[in-house]
Length: 85
Image (cartoon, rainbow, N blue to C red; front, side, top):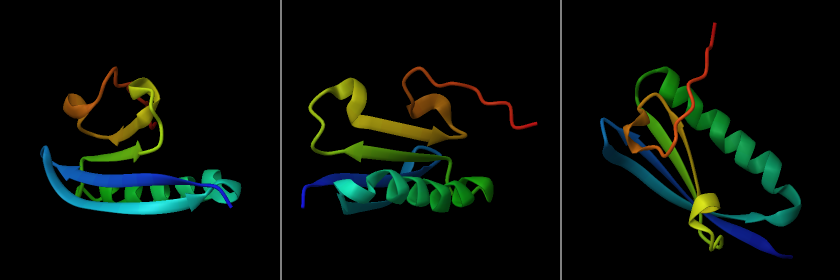
């Protein structure tokens, strides 16, 4: 069964707080990545983290290799502001 490798990093004030690697089966990738993002988004909501980075290790295109979200745009490329009201 094909899979993708993902490195997930959490940052607070620009400092790496955790890094974990996961191997995600292709047939469940979208659901699993969404669940992982939701779990880490809670840490952003509490202020424990300011940015989450997903690095898709098998993606060769640097424009598609990284996905970042959070409340600290300094480590992001072309950050988008989202109105949560």
